[in-house]
Image (cartoon, rainbow, N blue to C red; front, top):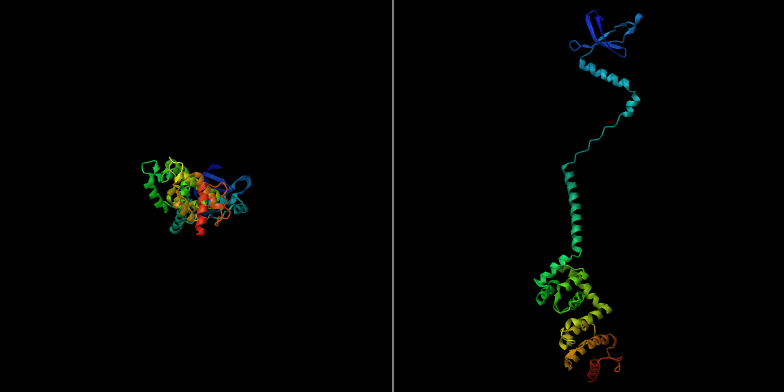
Length: 319
């Protein structure tokens, strides 16, 4: 409530009261003289409702008065229990990362990235790539679409296998190569895809697998039959005797104890070629006939070539 009033102060000094303000039973001057506030005690009502000025106290400054008055308002406006319940613990300041912490964090991130990147690269390298397989082919084919004798020689050198090694025959079978000493682009891509090999290193790691195929009777029979067509001249229906001896030595030389004797027989025989029926029966003979030939039936459906071998061998044993 604001009111204007004139008169004298409690000590009798003349003053004009301008802007008196009543607040909770207090009256104080709205003006300020030399930075001094006059604060009045609560007025006591007397007859007629007049207010009696009380004792005046000197306050240090307007600033202090305002500050203390604000504090009084605040305390009177809330109960102590409310204030206590609303007091929150101070938030802990987050400790700034030191140079060592930042370095350790960066090191962990770098390590995780390297592991991820290494795993990704490794996965890409392990996955078969037709593009990489094609590039690998042209390392040996040059500008042609076929790997010829020169390229084949370098290829064998790179994978660490002699051209006469039986594993090269197994590889040719997997590629379904049609001509000895040559791999066409189509044969290469089809066969290497089935083997999932697109690099020299991968093929080197597959050599043991290729050799193991010879230990499976069904696969060995397929490879043996394939060898005849692979090795013969394409304009011939038979295999010349010298090539036949080499191929038989490659396939049966280490597994058939009678092969050295059979090889001698072929060398002294009149045969210049071996046809496919004779070729296939030699394998059957090596698998079923005892080393002493005791179970050989001369009246069986064996080709004449093998009848003559048995007869020759028995005579050789007698002498």
